[in-house]
Length: 301
Image 1: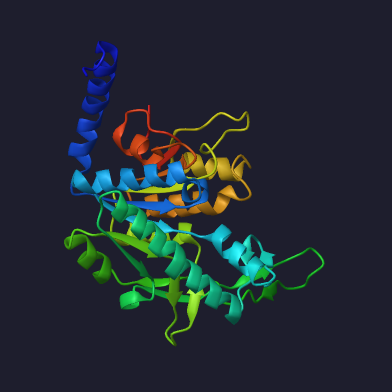
Image 2: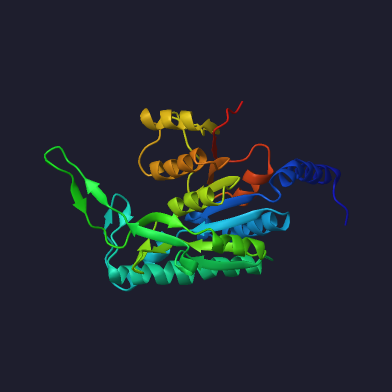
């Protein structure tokens, strides 16, 4: 069966458009934060896995960092453990931390590893505790209201931030031709476990390995202006301006700040893209248009 001429032209056009990006990114490291709908919908899960495997096959070094909030919430509910949130962060006592570690470091991490292997890749799963990869410290949360004389410090338990990272384990995995899949759990100097926001871990990993790109998969189409239009090529200064004037606010702020920090620390660009689009990663890496919002230190015409 032969291709129709129009289909053949479309395929040729796609392949030739992809070629410069393959040439440009061969040997480069691309960190992808995987979460949201892309982790739940079967079609999106497989399209994500094929995108990552293709990147590896053409000579790029993808690193996957994943979340797992819905899966953690689901298991806690089944076990009758109530979830409380402070500023969007789950209050995590010791019992909850055991569940978080089991779901993130075990169930979800191994599902993603299996997904990549099933789609022709060679993946290996780690948490921040493996090889002392992520040294964590307890996250301090403060709250101030007008009637308070001093800010209130709220203890949200085993929720951490990145104190430091050890690049050795990632370099070892990259050299062995495996795709690292990282669960965002770290340990402090006493060995206590901490749950860390996956966006933050992805940003710190991108900085540590001096990645070419940081890609954050989300459940929105990208950063929007006040009239709802998607903003594409933004400089770090423009993004700071959008935060100051209130265009970027609420739940989008942590992602944006993570992308900003990465770009300001030497990552070439950060992309916030819609994980609900099949092959979102492929479209971002291999096409002229890309999808979602790109942030870099360069002006985009």
